[in-house]
Amino acid sequence: MNISWIDSNSDLSVLLDEMAGCSRYAMDTEFHRERTYFPQLALIQIKHNNKIFLIDPTSVELQLFTDLFASESLCVLHAAQQDLEVLNHACGSAPARIFDTQVAAGFVGMSTPSLSSLVLSELKISISKGDRLTDWLRRPLTADQKTYAATDVEHLFSIQDNLEARLIDLERLDWVNEACEELRVRPAGPVDPSDAWLRVKEARALKGPARGVAKAVCEWRERKAMAADIPPRRVLSDIAILGIAQIVPTTTEDLLKARGVEHRQIGGEVGRELLAAVDRGKTLVVSLPQIENDDVDKELRPAVGLITAWMSELARTHHIDATLLGTRNDILALLRKSPQGRLSVGWRAEMVGKDIERILSGEAGLSFNGHGRLRLLPTNNPTI
Image 1 (cartoon, rainbow, N blue to C red):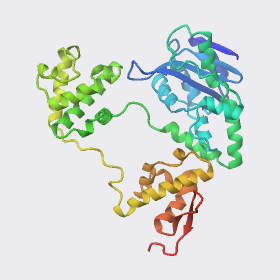
Image 2 (cartoon, helix red, strand yellow):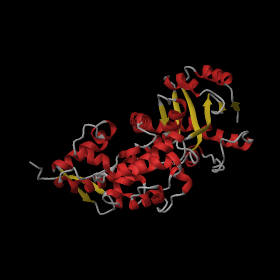
Image 3 (cartoon, rainbow, N blue to C red):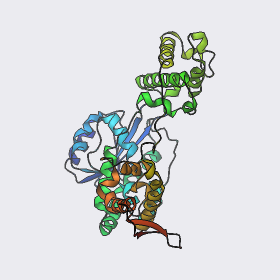
Image 4 (cartoon, helix red, strand yellow):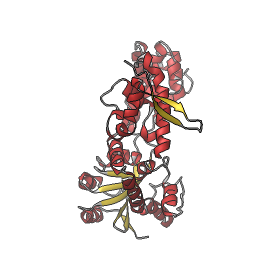
């Protein structure tokens, strides 16, 4: 395997100049987020032509990637969602055109395969899963670590070529391109701090002022964690937030009565900020998020299960990963006639949208064929 290590701006600039105008390149990243709020980019792997380059993001200016990412060059990745988030945070941008081999595999009947399983099924090559506990920020990397990292991009071109040939035969390549663009522009990154309380287990069970306090304290914790780039639990544990919400303290001494609160966490200005958050929260009236089908007409709610069953049948029939076809939220958006509904446009409308419209209008119904499958049959009593 031809591997080059890059840890200087000059060497990176030479590589990027060589890549200018290339038709495609493969990319992967290694990152950590255990000790920080934002993911720490630890390594970038790129395959260009037949060479693999390992780039040390701690030693180069990552803004140098801007022109490559903005170009028409296609970036081939596997399971790209987290890579895109990491690149956007670390580099300020991400590739403008992507081909995700995991997404593409879903359109030929595979269900979110790992890279190793995809390489095995498509190329009959077994690759090592490596050490999942590797500290990718430690320098220097060993030869084995470099080889393992390079393996993540080594076979992506071959996988892409194999999948594209099958997708062209199935007339689904445009569908994959549409799904990859959908993934590329999907919002990613930190949650809205005002919604952070919803991720605390048992917080939804709180009532009255306790719920408001939990919401306000969670928002304060999230903002502190973001500012310091540390995990929220390092600011205050979930159990401490629940304890504070139940006690509704007014003094530092009261704070220490809450389970999980330590003196070192609430000293000085931090303690005053925390008590101010508690005071704000006492007056908040916080409602639980609306249940997904609350704003769907009661007459249409039974249709959700019916449509879900038919979509699963279509996914099985056409050998498409059902998670790509649509979610419960997509069904609800269709029932609400949302203009942003994914089932009403593009390849999903082509595959399932018309069937769903026929079901909703009463022009067609579902029947069991006696052999474990569903079928769509016309009805004699369409809805007026």
